[in-house]
Length: 361
Image 1: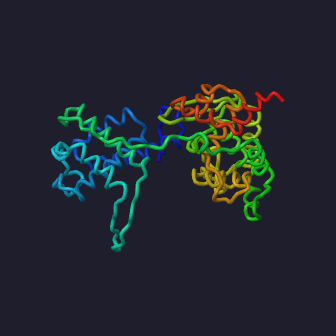
Image 2: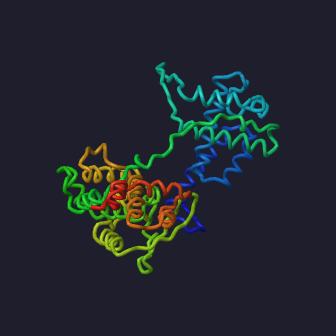
Image 3: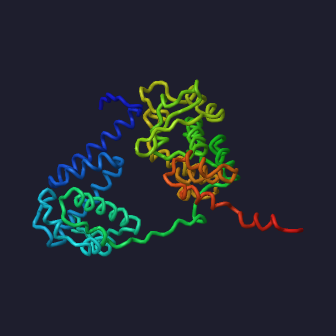
C-alpha cells in the first residue's frame, strides 16, 4: 500500500486505519441503504475502531432478526427495511440482549453445535451499539419513535481498587534485572535474549515510564523521536497527538538499541523490529512482557502480566511517589479522572501505614 499523507501520523498508523476503513466500507455494502447516513455520522463522531465494533454488533443483530424472528421477511442484510425496525419495541431489544445474547447456539458446516456466551460487559457494548443506531435513526427522522428509553439497564461490576493488578517496587526491580541480565530465562529463551535484550529492555522501560498502551508502543516509528529536542510523539486513541519528554534513562536505552542491535538491513520505519527486520507485532510484545513479568513475580509464563498491567504499574507508582492524580491522568491519557483515582486508592499497605502514623508508641 502506497501512502500519500498530509498528516503527522506515521505511515504504519495510516495503513492500519486504511485497512480498517476498508473493512467498514465492506460491511457498509452488506447493509441496507438506509444505513448510509448512520455510517457518515459515525465517521465524524467516533474512532474507526468504535465504528467497526458498532457495525459488527449491528450486523449480528440484523442476522438475528433474519434467522431467529418474524420481524422481517428479509433473507439478506441488504433487504432489511426501516419498516422492519419501526415494528420493533424496546422489549424486543431487551429480549435480544437479555435472553438470546447471553447464550446462543450455532451449527457449523459439519453439523456440530457451538455454544456462545456473552458477559455483561459484552452485552453492554452491544446495547451501546443498538442505542446509538436507534437514537440516530430517530434524530435523522428515519424512525418515528425513540425506543431506546425503554432499554433495560445492564449491570456492570464496579471496579475494585483491590483487584487492580500491578507490579510493586521489588517486582519492578526484579523485572528490570531479568530483562537486563537474562536471569530466570530458560536456555532457549537466553538464545533469543542475546539478540534482543536491548530492544526488550527499551520496551519495558517505555511501558513503565510512560504507561503507554500496547498499540501506542507498537505504532512507534524511528521518526517519532527527536533526540535533539529530547521528545517523542505518540498517537493516542481518537487520533489525539501527544508530545512526550525523554529522560536520560530512556535516551540511553533507545540509542543503545538503535545503534547496536536494531537491524540495519531493513527498510522498515518501525522503531521496534523482530529478528526478521519487520515491525514487531502486538502479540509478540504481549508475550515478551508476560515472559519477563512472570520472572519478576516468580510465577509461570502463563500467569505473567500483560502490557496493560505495566500501565497500571506506572500509574500506581507515580501516585505513590506523590504525583497529582491530574498529572498522572494527563500522562496516561485517561478520559476521566475517576479512572486515575482507582490507582490512587490502590496502595499496598496503605491502611497499615495510616494506623501506624497514629501509634503513640
